[in-house]
Length: 488
Image 1 (cartoon, rainbow, N blue to C red):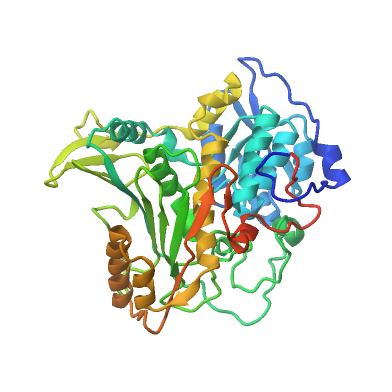
Image 2 (tube, one colour):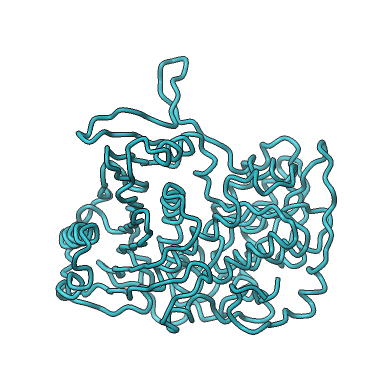
């Protein structure tokens, strides 16, 4: 047992152990095809299929989805191209398939870690979408499984493979603008109400709901849409912080060069501006108090003004990262590009762009999937741009922020101000947030915001100090037989 284990050893079911533990993977020759099985492909999984099919020496040989309609539609596309694939509803059966070398998965968040651990135990390499976990503890289990079984596990944080981002991060870290003062992550992305229904709703007839629920409690569906809107309920999702925001959180931590969780975290936020069946915040500030410089994150799901489709921006970025340094700022307003400004606001440098023959400027994009395949061939996890450990740490920063929110209390604007007294960055940010909410008709004196708990963490053990209520949320109770094992 490592110091990251949180409970006494729980055995996985005999069936899962029999089909997974000790499975052997073949030794790949340099010129042999890498055979991929894809799990979940309503959105991000489609991207995996499209990109992996373009890589020489890669074949997609199997597809798995708990929704037979989604599975059937994708199989039809393969058949129309004359490509044969095996099909599975139950991913455990897919893991038994010895004709599969690696798994690419884009299921709902609550499945990510168990898929990763089981696939590693079955001798498969893994490309797992972000966030790699639904909670902190299970993310660490992914790291342990990857290392124990010598598996290549890539987190779907694609920015790490884009040359412009890599160059910009190196520029900042080498002191191109002097000392970092603060890194700001931004997720200003429109999120309309998901609606409000009354009582239990029917699960689509094409969905095996037991398999879809997997490690999470199999609860009645009490929202209009099963698919996608799972992001906004805690049982299966992590809000926009863990959906879109994980990308920018990852870039922020990367810039700071931090390889542990933050020693102190605070959330201020709520689901404001409408009442629906969602639970996660659509407005949120997360403050990670790293010693080098703070990492401050903002989520805004409401528009710049009512009835508008436009979103606010900060220094020209809506979904991006702004690094403020002694001698200027670096603004990353996309996954691939960055613009450097001096202290007077004058643009002095750009990263991630190239001039084409016709004179137009184009982004320079990397290929995260190709990086994964190259590492599968080399058998070196050090070749990965988004190794599982990086994915775990960045995902966990989202989770610890949400834990602060979940154990927080509704507060008046005065109580919020009192809690952050002396913190200039938080004070400035909450002022902007309050103004933004006011424009959208939200009065915090009436529609109170949730003031999270200031949580202190021991980064070595990845446990909070002096707060067992918070520690209880580092993991969850798993539904048998879909149990993330204590001992991987």
